[in-house]
Every structure is written in C-alpha cells, then in structure tokens.
Image (tube, rainbow over all chains, first blue to last red; front, side, top):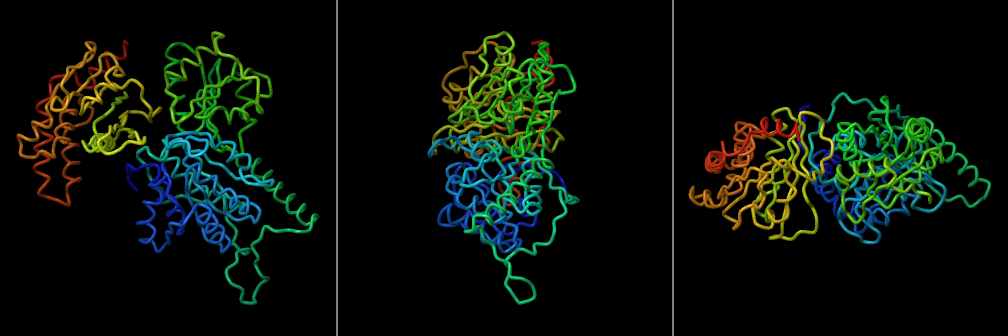
Length: 362
Length: 193
C-alpha cells in the first residue's frame, strides 16, 4: 500500500481497525478528538460500533465489558480523561482482560492545558489505579511508529491478557506524516484462543466468569503471585528500545522517548558537527523499561542527560538503571512548552562544562 | 538536505491548508515530510500556524525554532516569527495584509499582494492559493507541477474550482519566482554557516 499523509490520531484509528478492532468507546477531549472523529465514520464502514459514552468512566467500563466478551476493543483519551479511567484500568488488570488505551498526553495537573506533555509517565508505568498491577506501555516517536505500535498493542494485550497503553504526546496526535499500513504484517505473538471469554454459556464448557473479586486472602494472594509472574515475563521478553550513535564514542548519553527523542536526534547531529560526542537511548517500551540496556549505554558515557516534557518522571527510572554510577542531569519543559533542538544541545554543553547541576533527588 | 518552514496567518486564511499542500507535494516527490500545526486555544480570527519540514532524510525534530522560510499571511504572523527565520532564509510577506516591511536585512524578503492578486483574478477566496504559489516560487521547496496536480486533486469534486485555483497558484508563482534563491542555493550558503 502506498504511503498516506495522516495525522497521528487518524493513523492510530486506522491501525486499530486494521488490527481487527471493531469496537471503540470514548469521550471527547483535546488533543485526541481526531481519533473518535475518524472512527465515528470509519467503524460503521467495516461493520464495527462507535459509541460516544456519557463519560470517561462509562467508556472505560464499556471497554471492560467488551474485552470480557473476548472482543478486540480500545479507547482513547487525554490526560484528565485517562485519570478518570483509572478505576477500569485496575479492574482490567485484575480480571486479566486485554484492552488498548491510547493516551495523547496534555499538560497537567488538573485540567491543565491542551498542549503537548509527557507528564503521565509515572501514572502509566507505575500504576495509576489501585493495587499491584502493571500495564504494558508503548511510546511512539513518529506517526508511522504510532500505527505500528497500535497493531502490536492489540497482539500484546491478547497474548498477556493485559491492558496496553499507547503513550503519545500531543505532537504525535496532531502531527501529519507519511504512514504506510503493511498488508503482510504478522502478529508479534501467537495468540491462543480466548477460551476464558464470557460469550454465553451453552453447557459445553465450564462457565467463563470475568471477575476481579477474590474475598479469600490466600486465593487473592495466589492471584497476585500469578500476576507478578506475568509481569516478570513481560519484563524479560518485551523490552524495546532504540539506540542512536551507541556504537561510537560519546561523552553524554541522552535519554528521551516519543517526539522528544527526535528533538534530541537533531540536537545530536548539531553537536556532532561541532565535535561534541553524544549518543541517544530511546525507550520504546516504558513498561517494561530498558534498565539493562540503559546501564550498559551509560557505562560508556561521562554523564547521562534525561530530556522530557515533564518535571522529571522517566528520570526516576533512569536513575534506577544508572544506579549512581554516572551523574544524571535533567532538562524538562512543562505547561505545554516544547524542547527545541537548540535547547537540548545547549544543555549538553552545560553538562560538559560543569554549568549543569547533577540531579540528586529521586 | 532539509528545508523547514513556518506558514502563519489568521484562522481562515488557509495557513494550515497551504502547509498541508506543501507537505503532500513533498511526499509525492519522494521526500520525507512532517506537518505540525499549532493547536493551542486559538479562536476564529486568531492566529494559526504550522511548521512543515521537507527533507531527503527521515525528519528529526518536527519542532523548528529557526526555519529557513516564513510565509507571513498577516501582520501578527510577521511580528511573531520574523526574528526566528535563519540568516539567508526567506520571508514571504503578503503585502495585502501586512502594512510594514520586514526589519531583517540578512534574509531574502519577497513581497506578494496575495489578496489583491486573487481579487484581480475575480477569485477573492483564492488568496491562499496565490500565497501557496508565491511561496513555491520564492523558495523552490517543491515542484510547481506537484502543486498543480494537488490543486486538481483537492478540488476534484468541484471541477469548476480547478481552473480558477490553478490560475491563482500560477499567478502567485509568477509574482514571486526569481525573486529569491532556490532551495539548492540556500542550502549551500547554509552549509558554510
């Protein structure tokens, strides 16, 4: 198929349909409204169902219901709306239901603003709802990668029976870039039949009950152990990242995800032209986080610089990975302001000439 | 080679559409492109702008602080972005809506009265197409042939509009072409800078 110029939001919607998802439940919020807008006309064309729910709480519980019936289903929202969905995310994780949730992050806290942000990293990777659970988190840096990761997200959700987030900043949703949907795409995992789904009991199999309620302590502890064992397998098998310039010598290792990593890439080219050696590690999965790869890459550098559209959230995982072996510096913008390549490059110079202060708090 | 540009105007002047058509044309020519709109809380009549990158390589940062070219469709756009344009870059001013000259002396300034030209063609709503043609003429960032085929495609459902809009982009192109260095020349001077 030829390349099409699409907004990230539209590409995400189209990718979901091509992944066999025929159900969308959501509630409008900027800057991701083009996802429901696109699906509201596309889903009926493919025999699917689009529902604009009465609230995010309702939409996320419709997701729970459809996932429990074994359907591929997804929703999308932006930060304040995703906060409202956290109850359902915890229930999805507890009941081990596959669902894909797209968060096109905007600046917070509270209603905040509608401009790009990455300040929901901790909510996405460390919980957000109640209980011990983890959600697989995929962070695209281009419109093409957003489309590709949406397809992978449905496979991973089904394979692990776990919710999966696509975590994009406002730029990913609003930007237009060429995108190609590959017809010959293979699932990233072989997906077993959904024998656990509640599809109506006809007496030919045990009843399939979808539930996250376990009143007996030992039963619930065993359930938690099983969940943790699953998260362990995800940490072992699903880490994804990309390195840029890691095979060359470098003094500063930049760590950034999403579109910020592209800003850093442009900064890296500018710096290398000036003889300043830097490399970039870009986590693609935020859970599981590439701790080992980051530790190895940091070992070659004099210092590590984390760049985010937040006050420093992924920073904490980088500190965990580096474990005090290298000084870790941080540059972040908030409120919807963006990091420019010039800004990232000048922060690298500050790190190298001692004008930047190492981050000493978590 | 990367060419980046900011297209800015009042909401409704077509800044986002002009940027999209430049991105489409670049993509059809086999280039890597990105189109990034400002989507802040703007109201109708407020300002709208987009950043377009056309490149031979995958686009790095879609956020551009210092573009090689600016299309200022109105005065607030010139006020806002004039200082950001790179030295040796291009500023195209729609003099129908901008009542001052750019202050910069280190850039090529091209002036086209897009609205007046469109009015003269009896197609006042075609001012955005005049500006698009003028921008292509002033910068050479994409081929005029691609732009013309895009105009045909964009208005294919309303055949009556194809000819008038082709006239508009061509008139804009003619008003600007030859007034500023083409992309290749600009890139050489930048390679040294």
